[in-house]
Structures are given as structure tokens and as C-alpha cells.
Image 1 (cartoon, rainbow, N blue to C red):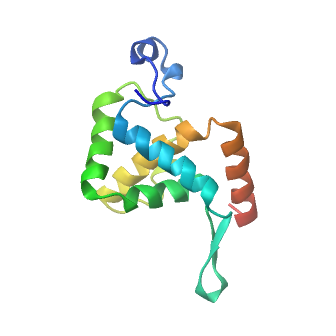
Image 2 (image 1 turned 45 degrees about the vertical axis):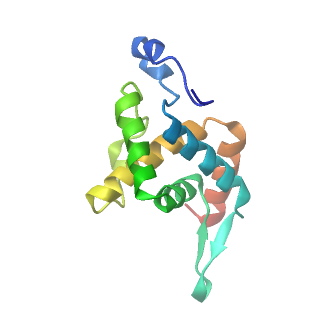
Length: 137
């Protein structure tokens, strides 16, 4: 079990305690998103002067989409089969705002879970909020 795991039996008794995820692939994704989040600058510049904040959510999407299809499927499998007690804290309307396809919905779901678990770290939360503020989100 990875660092982000917890006893799901305990979570079944108290859904508020379902704040960790089970599964090696999901754990690797979480660790890679954390590493990449701190490795990136606060924003990325594009042609024409457009800047995008490298928020935790943006980094999670890009890391997930950069995985091989087999790794993406294994991560989804971890999420669906090993984390039945994990509860999304935000409203679905806030999570799936830009999803326009089934793949987009699944990407948003996985990245919401990654965001939800990593944002508990005060350092990550502070940095993510600073990046969102600078970008005007």
C-alpha cells in the first residue's frame, strides 16, 4: 500500500474519513502529479501572450493524459474497484464543467480525486491558491 492509502473499513463507518486512495497505479499518479506540480513554474506562456496557470488540476490532467493507455485504464481500475468509499467533496457541476465526452468525464473524475487528495497538504493548497489567484481564477 502506498502513502496515500488508509483502512477503507474505517472509511465505511465514517465517509468523511475516506480521504485516501487504494491502488498502486492511482498512488503512482498521485505521486507523479505532486512531483510535477512543484517542478513546474506557476504558469506557462503560449504564443500570442496567453498564459495558463499550472494549477494542481491542470497538472493532474496533463500527467494523466500523458500516461500510456494501459496505465490510464489501470488507474481507472484502481479508482473504481479499490475505492468504493471515496466520496467526492465538490458538486458534480463544479467537477465536470469542461467535459464534453465520456473520456473527458473520466479524466475529470480521476483528476478530481487526485486534486482532492493532494490539496489536503497545506503547502500544496497554498501554492495552488497562489497560482489560481495570479491567473485570475
